[in-house]
Length: 89
Image 1 (cartoon, rainbow, N blue to C red):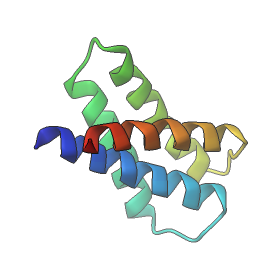
Image 2: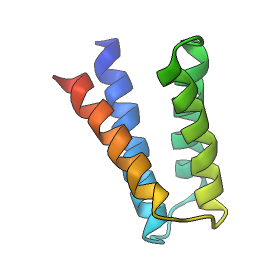
Image 3: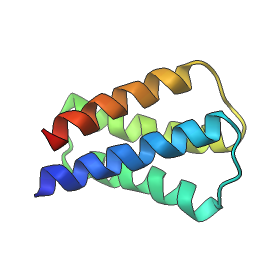
Image 4: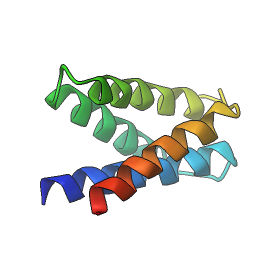
Protein backbone atom coordinates (compact mmCIF):
# COMPACT_ATOMS: atom_id res chain seq x y z
CA UNK A 1 0.00 0.00 0.00
CA UNK A 2 2.80 2.41 0.90
CA UNK A 3 4.49 1.67 -2.41
CA UNK A 4 1.37 2.74 -4.30
CA UNK A 5 1.21 5.99 -2.29
CA UNK A 6 4.81 6.72 -3.25
CA UNK A 7 3.94 5.95 -6.87
CA UNK A 8 1.05 8.42 -6.66
CA UNK A 9 3.42 11.08 -5.30
CA UNK A 10 5.78 10.44 -8.23
CA UNK A 11 2.91 10.59 -10.72
CA UNK A 12 1.62 13.83 -9.19
CA UNK A 13 5.10 15.38 -9.34
CA UNK A 14 5.44 14.25 -12.96
CA UNK A 15 2.20 16.01 -13.84
CA UNK A 16 3.31 19.19 -12.07
CA UNK A 17 6.72 19.19 -13.79
CA UNK A 18 5.12 18.84 -17.22
CA UNK A 19 2.54 21.52 -16.45
CA UNK A 20 5.28 23.91 -15.33
CA UNK A 21 7.42 23.06 -18.34
CA UNK A 22 4.60 23.95 -20.72
CA UNK A 23 3.86 27.09 -18.65
CA UNK A 24 0.36 26.13 -17.60
CA UNK A 25 -0.96 28.31 -14.77
CA UNK A 26 -0.80 26.48 -11.44
CA UNK A 27 -1.57 27.56 -7.90
CA UNK A 28 1.57 27.93 -5.81
CA UNK A 29 0.19 25.54 -3.20
CA UNK A 30 0.09 22.70 -5.71
CA UNK A 31 3.71 23.29 -6.72
CA UNK A 32 4.80 23.41 -3.07
CA UNK A 33 2.83 20.22 -2.35
CA UNK A 34 4.53 18.31 -5.16
CA UNK A 35 7.96 19.58 -4.15
CA UNK A 36 7.42 18.90 -0.45
CA UNK A 37 6.05 15.44 -1.20
CA UNK A 38 9.23 14.42 -2.99
CA UNK A 39 11.50 16.03 -0.42
CA UNK A 40 9.70 14.37 2.51
CA UNK A 41 9.73 11.02 0.70
CA UNK A 42 13.46 11.40 0.08
CA UNK A 43 14.30 12.43 3.63
CA UNK A 44 12.24 9.65 5.18
CA UNK A 45 14.29 6.99 3.36
CA UNK A 46 17.67 8.71 3.65
CA UNK A 47 20.68 6.68 2.50
CA UNK A 48 19.35 5.36 -0.76
CA UNK A 49 20.43 6.95 -4.05
CA UNK A 50 16.82 7.13 -5.24
CA UNK A 51 15.95 9.10 -2.10
CA UNK A 52 18.71 11.59 -2.82
CA UNK A 53 17.41 11.95 -6.38
CA UNK A 54 13.90 12.59 -5.00
CA UNK A 55 15.24 15.40 -2.82
CA UNK A 56 17.10 16.94 -5.76
CA UNK A 57 14.02 16.72 -7.98
CA UNK A 58 11.91 18.29 -5.22
CA UNK A 59 14.24 21.28 -5.14
CA UNK A 60 14.34 21.34 -8.95
CA UNK A 61 10.53 21.64 -9.06
CA UNK A 62 10.89 24.90 -7.14
CA UNK A 63 13.49 26.06 -9.67
CA UNK A 64 11.14 25.26 -12.55
CA UNK A 65 8.41 27.22 -10.76
CA UNK A 66 10.82 30.17 -10.49
CA UNK A 67 11.24 30.14 -14.27
CA UNK A 68 14.21 27.81 -14.83
CA UNK A 69 12.91 25.48 -17.55
CA UNK A 70 14.89 23.35 -19.92
CA UNK A 71 14.77 20.08 -21.81
CA UNK A 72 16.01 18.47 -18.60
CA UNK A 73 12.44 18.84 -17.27
CA UNK A 74 11.23 16.17 -19.68
CA UNK A 75 14.02 13.79 -18.64
CA UNK A 76 13.11 14.24 -14.98
CA UNK A 77 9.43 13.74 -15.77
CA UNK A 78 10.21 10.51 -17.62
CA UNK A 79 12.31 9.30 -14.69
CA UNK A 80 9.51 9.95 -12.22
CA UNK A 81 6.95 8.42 -14.56
CA UNK A 82 8.90 5.17 -14.83
CA UNK A 83 9.23 5.11 -11.03
CA UNK A 84 5.49 5.61 -10.68
CA UNK A 85 4.65 2.89 -13.19
CA UNK A 86 7.05 0.52 -11.45
CA UNK A 87 5.38 1.28 -8.11
CA UNK A 88 1.93 0.46 -9.47
CA UNK A 89 2.99 -2.93 -10.86
